[in-house]
Image (cartoon, rainbow, N blue to C red; front, side):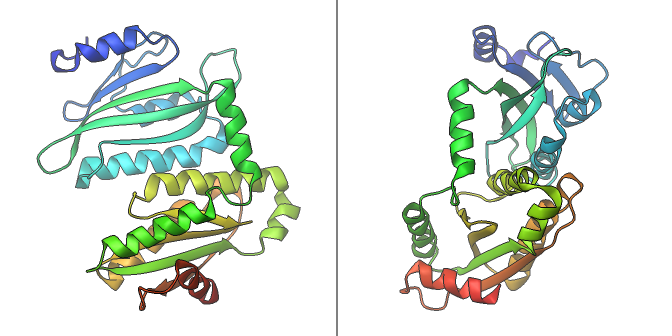
Length: 274
């Protein structure tokens, strides 16, 4: 039975939505509840473990799902400043059905120290229009409008006058060789994994963009060199090892010295460093 403190409005939402699967996880009591029919959570206390044990994730979605789970585990242990996190994963929702692309959201409550105590997960299949827009995004060399991204970078510089700012670029070594070895579709999946993972790891104050082909850029404020290096190593670790592919990432970093320069100049410096 769902705990009393989590009933009420949430139950009404669940009952009025027959497309989305809802789960509630009580972190402190190590209990997982299924709020909709179709999944037996008896004996399972963790949503991420359940998804792996049921073996319903498409192999190409396992890596980004693990990044999603790592972010939540980090919030449970060390705390988080966020109230929710989301990603897209491909899931087999019925025993005799195929994989369906779904939105996966986790909304959580935090204690006074920011540590996650309760999580509401919902898993909603894509509607047809969302499939179309996802493919449109995949077809462009840049996933965000360059002018919009440039303004996001400028905002980071202007709103953090007391912090250092780093422009980080990375790409994949010999990406053309990867295309020849693994195929274009597999490499497109790799780039989509980069996008989805960066969306999970980077905050609103760390805008990222796929500039072109396999080149990505992240802009982040930081306090110490160790903090910046730790962030880059985290990105490198999370983005490595997709789908059994062998590849290496190369990073270049430019620290903002002159805040009056156009953001493109800082990006060029990061490109030279890379």
